[in-house]
Length: 469
Image 1 (cartoon, rainbow, N blue to C red):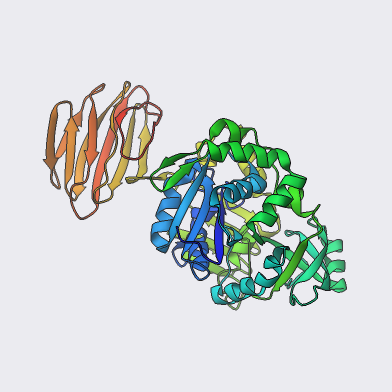
Image 2: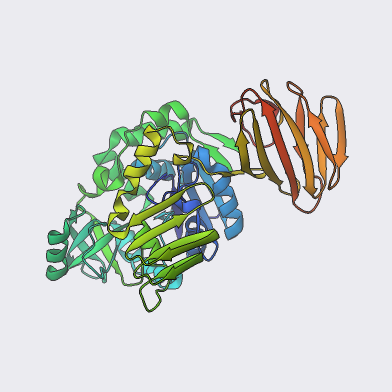
């Protein structure tokens, strides 16, 4: 990796559920295609590419292949640090500093924000360089456009001598209630806290050593016990688990006297609720916003997200209607911030849709669960060109494979053979088997599973191209 003037570090370890049913534990919002068919992570990578062609990502080990897909789609040069467990932004930033060993300033960017004008954002970052080089930790505050209760605020002080437009940070303000947010707007001099930071590596390391030495030390051991895995770097599990889970704001920024803020005047959203997502779509004359196959009839101020089937809102107002393949959310727009509580309710009830989608990405492609019944399940497997499932067996189920597109290479016991469209085969219970795509086009297979237990954990892997256990 080259040593640029600024090294972007994308923080992609979040697993938020505020955009359920699209965002779930197994597919957090940064991986959901929300804007022009692109995920927020891909858009963040493309934005960072304007600043440097090389970058680091810090992500959850559970999402490594989703990260890899976004990196490939964005066409960037990136190394990926894998967190074995989530430990918030302080540990993620400490690990990145310890791994980078660079003379560049480090720019930390959340993976799940939407900034339409990437060029304006890059110019703002460059405006903070002088202050960062002078030894300040620079944060970028968004000029507020309304009294939001969903964001924290930064109260700015005097302009730093010779470092304009950077200003000293007087105070970090917690998310306010409505009355406090309105007072903040009237006072002026406050910015939304976007969680974007720029600093020299040595300055940030010094701040961590002063204010969060335990986090820094745990991450130092985790980095020293790293294990390379292709383009991934797996941090030492035992050491990283010992790191205290705390945001960089609480761990460092609120205690440091050398934090500066540079205003960003462009459009920005952390896409933290369905109301924020709705705001990405233009409204019609009645205030309705529609993404996909939605129809509003005699309705007002209603948002419909319907990427697959037709969804009709008739005679309603101020609703959020979010449709997906296996779950539906209908909510009053004023209750958008309570979606997390809904997910907690579903988790307590043991509803699988609380955490997992019907459509699941895998490093070799994906599968979609089409139907489930008593002792059977039907899936549609899509295998990328060159993709190979692991050599595996199941103790409690048998499988039938029917090729509907492309060419399949099948390993079943000692036999290896190819199947073309409209051909099929049977994999007995307990038989070693593998499916792969030797062709140049997508392979699509209908898989019919039958047996007493059909869970994804009934799998024994003998060989795997993707480092899975």
